[in-house]
Length: 426
View (cartoon, helix red, strand yellow):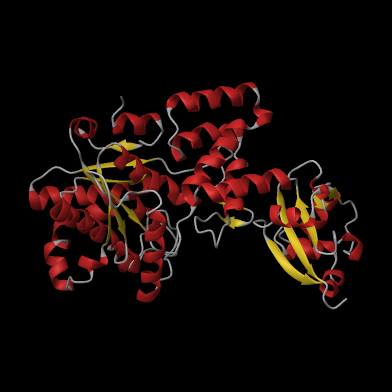
């Protein structure tokens, strides 16, 4: 049976780690934490790797702590950012913290078992510090030279905008978080993405200086796609875990559209499937990639984790119906149900006929501009009710409204938008 460190190595979740951590995780139960930045009221799929890190920690018998940074969120982490972020109000931060807390509860057990998870908000201690006390007790242990060596600070210093003292101080705040968790809960490990390594080692140094104890850090590689794109971003925007922002159907489709080159990596990172199961899916992808068996399992597993069994079953049914070779033979009710989670707009018949198709493609975000929409049509990439459209001057009419209720616009075979037509004025 693998220990946690071996498991993380196999899954590709170890970029750097402190000396002795592998032996510690194999020997005893450890309390570890990961921080979540409350810049929005929902996490997105880019945060999912971090969530899975905590969930794996708990499943291997260790004690997870999730910090939702209500305090550090008022400052902003410069790591990976090219410019200063917009500061949020205390009220907005509190709303965001509450939203993230609800999502974490789907992955972590906060109630039962010998190692229940904790959620803490670092505003509980950071807001109580006075400036002079913080500078004396924390700031004096870090030289400016030390802070300038950190990659997150260095990169910003070389940018045109530079870095404010506010974000320059972030490293001290996160180091203090680690010390507070060490004192309060015996936390000796911090984990996160590789852009957090400098902040993590600052906390390790502070614990060593003030408590004469050894703490540890572990980070995993930042996510990218095999094609070099930014993970979690699509032409439609960010993929969120909140069903109000990204529907379960859209989340399912996001994973279903994973490239063959990425699918095994994602199965390791974002599911709890074991080596044997993933090995079988890897072999299936190699022998019959057109069946997309691994992508279907990935989409089902992740959507179930995020939204539950009922929602994933709806997403699967909707996907099967939506991409059926002839979905138009369905009843009106079934067709509407199959499209329930597809992005949609409500329009009147008059509005539908006022605009050319190229403008509708822009308005529904299927194209970024009318010129792009024209190129897509001429290239055979645009569909109206699953029929390829070749005329860039085309206008939609009543004849395009299926069963007097909808028009389905498509970019390629998988990206769709539904125009729901209100004909009460007819």
